[in-house]
Each structure stands twice: as structure tokens, then as C-alpha cells.
Image (cartoon, rainbow, N blue to C red):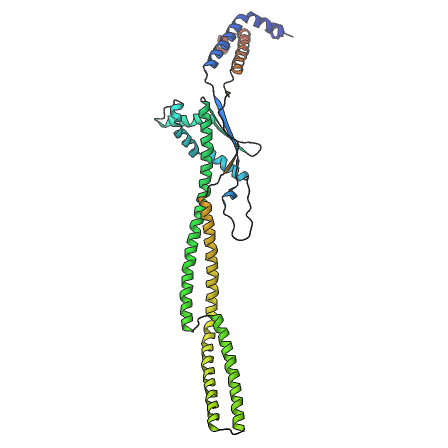
Length: 365
């Protein structure tokens, strides 16, 4: 092996420059120690939450059906919380409430300063979906108490925003139900007016009772007529007193007249019975639907006015007592080792290229 590239030659070269290497390494190590000591301590506060099921905000069902409650939400509910947590609304709220521009000592009088403030907060704020389908909210700050307070407010704003989205959806449903009830009530009014006109026209008061009454009346009249006609026939046969016969004749004539009147009333009644029944059926169905919709509206309004949660706290934020960074020992060791390696490489590069005539290379010779 060529001696110029042997390990012994490399070690000799490094030994020749050992003083310079140790000086550079020592200076970098010293500067890294001083620099790391000047770096501020950062503390991380975190909270872990699970998404709550939106069914907790639903009203109880009408009737005998049992309401299905789901305590924890699905992946879609977790995604919704994650999106809210990373929204500009939440970040801007925290920046303004805690006056982070002054806290971070950033001038926000211009657009560049505002962008710098938002970027700086993004570096200190982190949201993570854990492997257990939970949402972890973490904030770093030089003040451990402020870190805890920011996480707590972020969690609260996420919950309030998610609740507002659910309530806005409920409000739209409430308005839709109210509009539907108003339309159905107007339709019922039309049904009532039309029904009154039909009943007046066809002399109908109560279709069910009237039909029964007409049937009984017709049966009684026909039975009485048949009885009196038979009686009259027997009287004529046996030539009873004329006054008695005339009296029975008048009764028969009266019954026939009564039957004719009843038949005419029944005829008019039958003409209006079908449309009246149809309107009554539509009216009763409409009344039942309005009653059901009003009950739904009442329950939905009650649900809209009650409080509920959109997240379950698994691990609540606390004041951190141990700093999360900087790791000063790793910084010093890393920079010192890097300085030593780069110094060695620099020495080898200088020694390896000292015999090269750079002027000839530049001249192309």
C-alpha cells in the first residue's frame, strides 16, 4: 500500500497538527458551553383528550325508542378536533389573549413581524394524534405557568368551537322545524275553512254520528210505516170506523213524507260525505304531524339550551417542573465532536493538497 494513504501516515499527520486540533476543539467546546448556558430554558405542558361523541348533544327520541348513547367519538370526530386545534382562529385567539408579541419580544407593527410571530408560536405549539386515537396538545414556553395556561385555554377554545359548530347545526334544524310547523299550521287552517264550507253546504255536523243517526231514523221510519200500513189494511178489511181509518191514513202519509225528507237529507249527506271524510282524514293527519313536530322542536330546543362536552380529558395540563430543552450536555458534546472531526478533516485536506500547484491547474497546464 502506498505510504501516502496509509493509516500510519494519517496518524502522523494528525499528530503533527495535534496542538492546532486541540486548540480549535477546545475553543469550540468552550464557546458551546458558554452559548448553551446563555440559551433560555423551555418547559413543555401537555394535555391529552379524547373526542366525545356528538350523540351526547342529541335530544331524546320521541316515543318508546331507547336513545343510543356513545361516550367516545369516531376517527372523524377526532379529525374535527384536530382541525380546530390547528385553525388560525385558535392560534390568533391565544396570541392576542396572552399578548405573545410582547412575551416573545417581536415587533408586530408590520406584516413581516406578524408573520414572524405566527411562525414562532407554531414552533412552540404542537398537536399530535396518538397511537391510541387521542389528541395531545403541547406548548413550550420559557414560563412553565404560562405554558400550562396556554394549553388549558387551547383545550377550552377547541371545546367551545366544536360546541358552537354542533349548536349551529342544531339551530338550522330548529329553524327548519319552525318553518315546517308554520307551513303545516297554515295548511290546517285551509283544511278547517274548507271543511266548514263543505259541512255547511251538505248540512253535515258530525259525519260519523250523523250517518249512524240517519241509519237508525230510516230503519225506524220504515218499520213504523210498514206497521201502520198493515194496520190500515186490516182496518179497511174489517171496515172499522171511518175516523179511525182516516187517523191511521194521516199517520201513514206523515211517515211517508218524513221518509222522503229523510231520504233527501241522506242524499245530500252522501254527496258531501266522501269529500268531508277526506278533508277530516287530512286534517287529523296534519294535526298529528304538527303535534309530533312541536314535540321534536321542544326537545331540540331543550337540547340546544343545555351544555355538553365535545372532548374527554384523559391527562390534564399541569405546570412542568423539568425543562424540555435545551439539552446542554448533548449540545456541548455534539459541537465539540463535530469541531474535532472537522479539524482532523481540515488538517488532512491541507496536508494532502499542499504539493498541488494550483496556478498550473488554474492555467490549464
